Length: 215
Image (cartoon, rainbow, N blue to C red):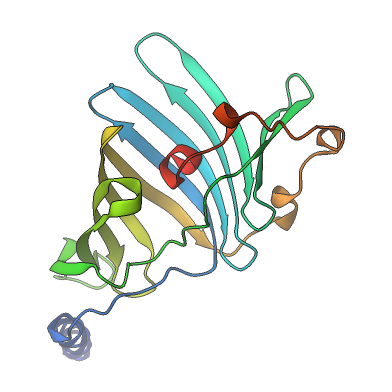
C-alpha cells in the first residue's frame, strides 16, 4: 500500500509539473557529451564529442563525418572571445588557425520562441521510465533558418534540435550521454604544436555562421 501511495504522489507531482506553463530556459553553462548530426538531403551523418563552456564562450567538437563515399575526421576548437578557431590534427601534429567571424550562440531557448508541445519521452506509468520535455519553434533571420528545439523540462538539457537552413537544407541534431560539467578543462587549451600557428586572414577561411562552426 505504501508503494502505491508513493507512486501516486510521484505521478501527481509530474502531472502538476505538466500543468504549469513551460518557460524559456538556458542550458547549464558547462556541458559535455555526444551529438549526432544528420543532413538528410545530402545523406551525411556526423558523430561528435562536444564540449561546451558558456561562461568563457568556448566550444570544442571532435567529429567523424560519414557520407556514402568517405569518412572525414575533424577536431575544431572555437574560442569566441578571442574570435579565432583551430583545426587540429594530432595525426599530423599540425594546427590551422583562422578568424572566427560570428558571435557565440548559447544553448538556450530564444526569447521569441513559441512553445508548441509538452510531451513525455517514454512513460510516466512508473518512476524513472519517462522524461518530460518541451518543444519550441521559431526563426533565426540572421542565419536564414527556422528551428524546432526540444529540451528537458527540468534542467533544460538539449534533446533534439531540428533546423531548416537556407543554404544547407534540413539538419537534425540529437544530443545524448550529456554530462553537466567539464571533466577536463584542458580540452579548451590548444595543444603545444598549435603555438606556432599563424592566423590565416584570407576571407574564404572565415567561419560565416554558427551552423558552419558547430555543425
